[in-house]
Image 1 (tube, helix red, strand yellow):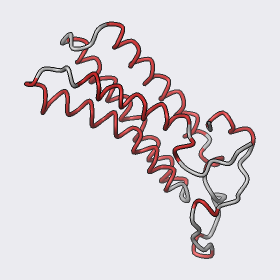
Image 2 (cartoon, rainbow, N blue to C red):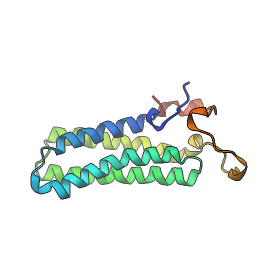
Image 3 (cartoon, rainbow, N blue to C red):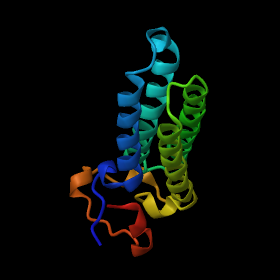
Image 4 (cartoon, one colour):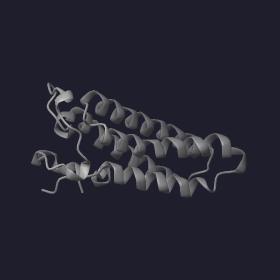
Length: 155
């Protein structure tokens, strides 16, 4: 099994990035009067999902922070679904576009939830670690083995 070296190796990050880009493209067609409201909000929340996943990865040294950031990503995904509801209600998105995007965010949530539940599998050190005794190392130099049971999360 390949060891993930970056947040970019996570399937959930890849899907969130791809979906945020699709939202950006579709929101270009929203009316000008929505520029500083719906358009801005849906773009911001969709991009925040992938940003929170990336930040969680970078801060997985501390389980509580890792879980918090993934939980924030889950919240942003849910917020994006709410903005998608508004875009559909205003008829800025077709039923097909809405269904495809909503399905993606449901899938993202279904990937984030088990990551939160299994945070110990992703964090660098066991919960009782004295972090003051561990020197910092760059991600690329890390050689720690991940359990094969978490293989589903990586590309």
